[in-house]
Image 1 (cartoon, rainbow, N blue to C red):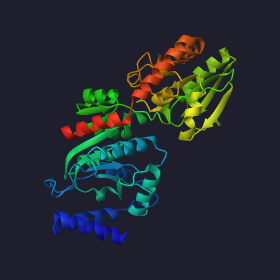
Image 2 (image 1 turned 135 degrees about the horizontal axis):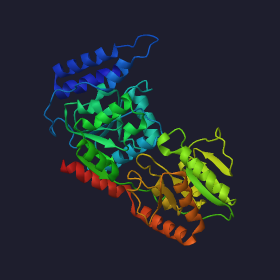
Image 3 (image 1 turned 60 degrees about the horizontal axis):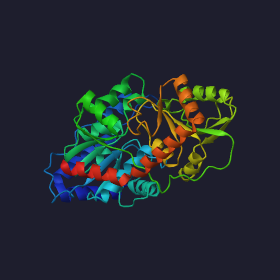
Image 4 (image 1 turned 135 degrees about the vertical axis):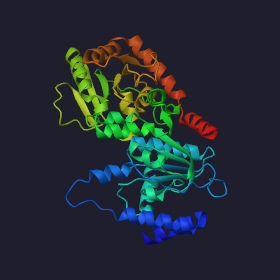
Length: 404
């Protein structure tokens, strides 16, 4: 750790001068000495840290002192299976190959890494791009052309950092809705009022943030890896299989509502069974025929989707990547008909329903009973998925960054 700190001090001194390097070192040391009162929850310390503080010296950013089109992304500590982190790193890798070669990650506190080398090795193993560099802690932010917030807990630090040309916010969902109306809702919502430029996952978020908070926004859409997600053929089975993306630990995925609708369908149809995937649901009383697949490895998902006659995908906030991936495997879908969920697929590509037990059950039964509708939705969904590429979406984001 000492050797790493000395190397960082030398880099800053060479680039910004000895005075700036000393000031940064003193500031970092002061923060390290702050400790919570033993045995008590330090609300002031925890949320006070998230709210950030001024960093940087208002340096003039030029190609001579900062790599051109360099990007630094602030992220919460990661897990290899985190969909949000996978999406961030995918975009970083695609941009790196589109004229933004200097991609750097700052892992924001709290994190579990002893040093940056350990974090770098784990990050590269998890996400597979050794060209993306990693540092630890908000004090490791260095001057860059683009500084990018991701989760709301990173946004205040980005807004208060001075030595960058553009302060951006990579928004994948409306994060205030992850919480009840209270302090954390307010903390998350207020990040949309910091003057950052939002790059959003889909048009619903872009329109909402622009209309409700006056943010400058740019939307990209979702792509699909059709080398992985493709029809693998339905094995002979008289049972009608209904796939349900079941995440009882994630309230916005509406597990309880879906479960009641599925119970109604299965009581009316003795030939139906449900495949639950996304979480272990063995602790729940489920009276109808079902398979508890739990957390399924990515490489096994295409076969699972291919064996299903219909999929139920519910979301009270922004969509996940699931609809395109399911559609690519030839499985038609039922999705809730709300603005946050109906922006991705047309009404020829998915069947939309009211967010009610009756509405969901009725839509599932329609697809199971109507072979023509089933075939039409499956064909249109596969066509849409094949046309959706991450490369095309990254081209759009790269063009927007250049326009700034």
